[in-house]
Length: 134
Ligand SMILES: [Zn+2]
Image 1: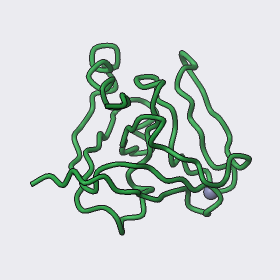
Image 2: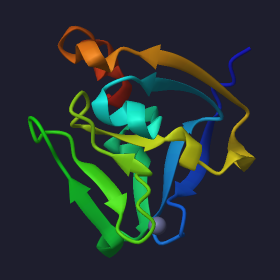
Image 3: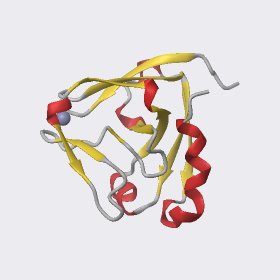
């Protein structure tokens, strides 16, 4: 039932300054996290290996926000404020794109699962495989 065909998805921020593409199945598996920052943004993660993410435009339009451990790199568009992708602490070798920022034209299905980021230390390891190249 799950469509594993690898597709090029396009996405970006709201104003259009930041655009990117990713290689991922057309049916994606996402995580909605309840940690302090994801919860207020209702961030819906699609984590991919860095090699499957390409920033197309907007490198100079990004601002970086860090807090706490400083390990997660929260990039957001300095014009519209949208965080369309970032480098998560759980996956420093990967990129998490916000599934709501993907152009839905290429998506066949979205299967979302809650992720308990409030208990990050206990759960983060379960995400590590998502950014590995296979
Ligand atoms: Zn923008």
